[in-house]
Length: 423
Image (cartoon, rainbow, N blue to C red):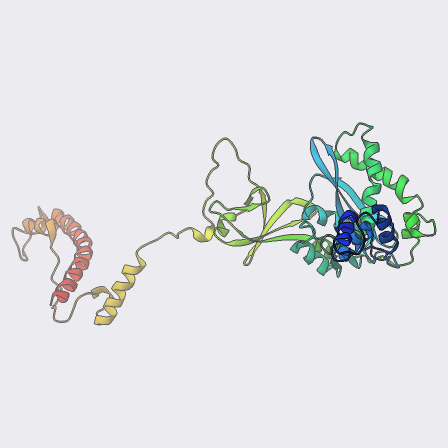
């Protein structure tokens, strides 16, 4: 039997007969079964010994003062509004007092954080928390919060629910409330939680608890404890329960993916392509804002998808091109070329030995002036009939020559630069 506890009594009798220990039919099944049980080798006893870690009961424990240890766990609840519900509770290990309990739709880290926030808000900070190894209890957000509040987090060993027997026993007690609630008309989840709170105060907290030993109720044990409550500064307490989701990339429309959809960032076009941190509070997950180094915190709202495409957001101010009054490259090249050749700024581009700049084309105004004097060259002598007319023509010719001269000098300088390169 010790070699293989799963062997049946009939198999053991057959082994004895085959090995010549007893004659065939000499020993009866009931006789051998009684002898094995009397010596501690019965079937049920051997199954307990087979795996001591999971089956041998552990010794009971109880912390001496309140808020030394809180245990927590989820429990499946009834269907409400066509959706399944889950019950979460935090129980004080010393007094069996439920510091917080509620039914909710879902079981995730946000619900754990929000329930812990409400429990601490009412009854102060515990010294330690005791969870199972579920994913909703093992998150960076819970570790960060508990580290900020100086709370030690402990987890049960795998497949050992008896180690947190107080919360497991309470989950069986709450079955009586769930059965009673089915007899009435539950309107919604909020109404269901109102019924639960009434049942909790009248049928659990105020009733004597057998586990306390002296017949006290959980309420008397908790509120009668002289251990002071560990209350926190409100602002520090609020910041400790901020949930930070890091490394979320902003897409080209200025949105960030978070939760089950996208959120539009105010002025998010300035963060396009950057990895940001999404921050929200556990009790108000709808209020989301985004943080990134070098940018002030910006609010993010859920993206509303309409029937038509929304107007494209404009570029951020720092990405808009300035008004250009010329090419900075060409201006700089022309200036550097003139400084290297030693030419004055107005003569940049004319190489050595190029000679004086040729006179600009006099244009039609100068020809008109020559016709007024009767041909080229200076004229002497009075010309009363055409003097006023010639003066007007000369003035117009001078202005036109100045305008053309400016364009011609730039063209000549460019031609000289080309000739120099050819040489």
